[in-house]
Length: 302
Image 1: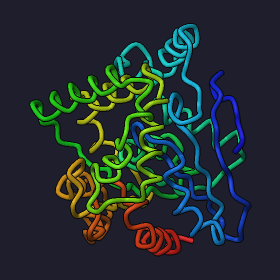
Image 2: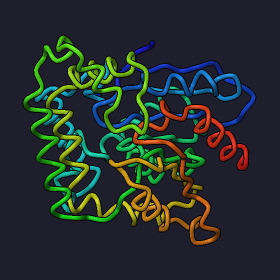
Image 3: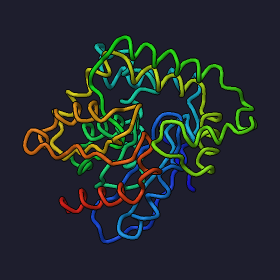
């Protein structure tokens, strides 16, 4: 584990040794998670690829942003995005802000060529980063990530439930009996190891409230959802989408919908790949299969 400051905020990351493959694999976790969930996948891939994983600001072991830093970030974002910037553009927890963090991280670590692999919200962040860094980002693989359709009632319910989860979670949540067992079955096709259930509880408990709420609300506005297909359609790099066939959080039809905006889909329709017997945590549920797909995708473009 190593640390680095990005825009005045301490971030935690892990970087494996370089290999002969010319591009690094950069892993971006989802909402209320951490870099930990990528480790089984990285163990399989690190022998052939340099792998970078890190905790988003306010999640895992990375720090959140102070009130003073937030004010400074707002000023920087306004300068970068102009007077027409949306509220999401100015927020330190929006997908665009997290993409700026990732851009800085890659530059600080001298990673000039990378494939970005993002889970759920991390997929959105990866897509935004690819737009910001067209020369450095060679391609994107979205895992359990899709969307681009704003369903008002569904999103309002999702935001309300998520807000209550963030606001009401007790700090003593990890101490509740058997809650980790319940988390081994939440949002997955088959139960995962109990150690991962405990990890999910820990990450839920330690996520900074402002980051958890900000990332949820800023990434699910009507404006943000409608921008995603535009971003995907504009990307010149290859973009692939891995969907869990039993994912109830991001159903395959929504993954295919977002994938359909990319030129690869229009050319051959093969950039959306379903992983069988898989829910919303593909990197844990079907680690070997996800690793195989990543290998097959990135080696095409070596």
